[in-house]
Length: 372
Image (tube, rainbow, N blue to C red; front, side, top):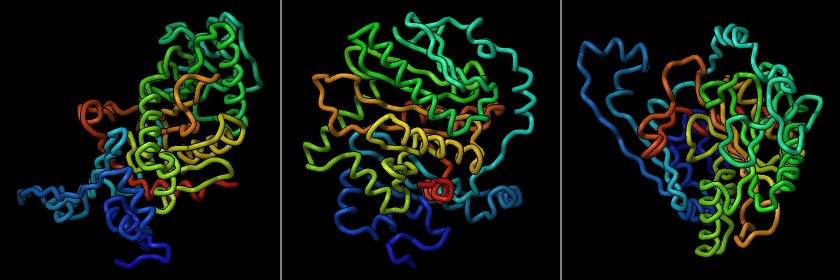
């Protein structure tokens, strides 16, 4: 198979998740060892018998009958967290869908009156008061899922009208909220930042907003699982878990560093187009790159509903070892907000993620968007 000078398959078609074994085989020995220390990789072929009367329909929707009769499937499993993703050649070779529903603007207009339009009148405030900025203001979540749980409300109603300035202010306000919340309860030291956009993401109010929470005793389960995986990886290999994950993605053409922030299109995405950012701190530099990434997903890949989370280390020293855990931001597309079909089924909930978007194609678009 023809390769470029750096070992990554050269043609657009070959730079695909379905050819991941070939790309891994072209890595230098150290990076290849890191890949297999981190991941299990399996390729299988699904076969079926196609009735003749279906051929015309299949050719219209999938290009050819041959594409359906034999389907190459790649499964990537993280050996440490057991996150697993299945990529189907038939799905991954499709162009990345770029469709923002024309009805979305009308739907947003119909739902324009909401509590967040006048938050100082229609939302409760935290016991330590509100934090006000030019673009955002905080409120206390009226139906809390933890003792300290707040909302960062955008002054702009349209949840997709955010810009870099808003994202940077949102991060600064979140930092201040964590500090004030911690002052109220000194035992609450584990912070989490969340940004759910539109209905498919679980947002009950379409008006733009993010959420912040601070928990006690130990971090939220999935954050703690990742910390323990990083610690176990260090103990077993002597290398940094997140350092190796980024190195593998970078050498495959899926990762790139922008100033202090490492960005990659995920090899084990939870769902479509998942992008991960690793940063030394939850700060202005991360906020700038985070804003560029999400803006790129919206503008270039037509993501309309998404989930973004920032896993943050504790605010103070704790008994656990956090030395291998950077700030981790994960953002994932949740699909057409007006579609009746859910992107999560029994497979995603109880087995492994099934993903249609190709990380190599997501990465190609990201690198056109990101600037130093």
